[in-house]
Amino acid sequence: MPTDLTCPDCGATYRAAPDEPWRCDCGHPLEFATRPLPDRPVPDFSELDTRRGLWAFEEFLPISPEVTLGEGFTPLQDAPGWADGEGGVQFKLEYVFPSGSFKDRGATATLSRAAELGVGKVVEDSSGNAGAAIAQYAARAGIDADIYVPTSVKKSKLAAIERVGANPVRVEGTRQDVTDACIEAVEADDRDSWYASHAWNPAFFAGTATFAFEVAAQRDWAVPDAVVTPLGHGTLFLGAYRGFRALNEAGWTDRMPRLLGVQAAGYAPIADELHGEGDAGQNDVADGIQILDPTRKDQILSAIDATDGDAIALDADSATEALDRLHRGGFYVEPTSAVAPAALAEFRERGVLDSDDDVVVPLTGSGLKS
Image 1 (cartoon, rainbow, N blue to C red):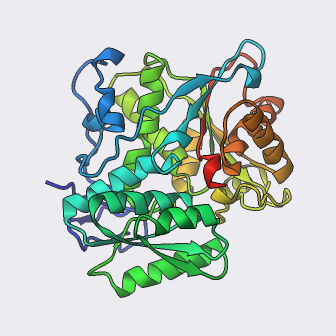
Image 2: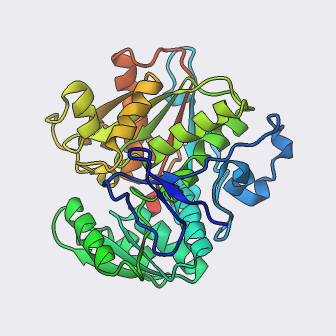
């Protein structure tokens, strides 16, 4: 039985259905009415059925694995050249997913939810990676998909959407214009179009929470001191927060990591809120996080506060230098992936990270899509 939805702001509830709303009547994002937790001791790694990919953690998920491509358990690799002092850095290679980005975590959960509900068509807006992931998993599910993208979308990402049979809808203007056009289409066709938004749909965040489950399991349930992620709409940042929180509440781990987000200069509302960094230049290299008005901004700020975290903005030069260094080290990632490794030095310089801190950094998207 699909899980109902609720609004944590006003308390309204909505029954699970193909025509369920994509946001509360009060305007806030919806969440699942129940948040399952396992009622058993923490397992040994050998007890996890990693053949099921991220669905090995189904006990934590309010969704059944209806649509999957075996995604999950991406490699966790030491990155000694990026460490400082006694501390260690590990890269989690999120770019080896079926569609080439971590967005598959959210896509498998979102399309599984759509399949549970009997949805006939999904609609999404994206700068590229989320759209490609939703399109690919919609194809796997046999569900039609309209993907709204900016006219400037990279050809490789547009091809990934088109070749699985989804319908790309190109929109002139800013990234916000793309979202606005998508929402207008959804609201005009609310009986037949289900908004599979990576910013609004709670299923997407249930999927990205599995990042934390895997990190903890691959480290024998030892939580790192900090996790550094790119930060746009916060799909991975908030997913990590929710995942580590769930592990802690289940008694499988004993603490939370500090969550550190990295934004592109010129598109940095969170860093601006914290440090007044909104005018720190322009970073057009990290196109995947060029978000000026994150849907869940308040939740991102709350997660930062709850974990003694932080967020900063980086310019294009820092991202480009880090990208070259990653490529030379054998990590063939796209530009947005470089902002989190690039931020390590800045966080250390600001005293946010100590030299002996143990840090995990996801590399979020494949260079094959650049």
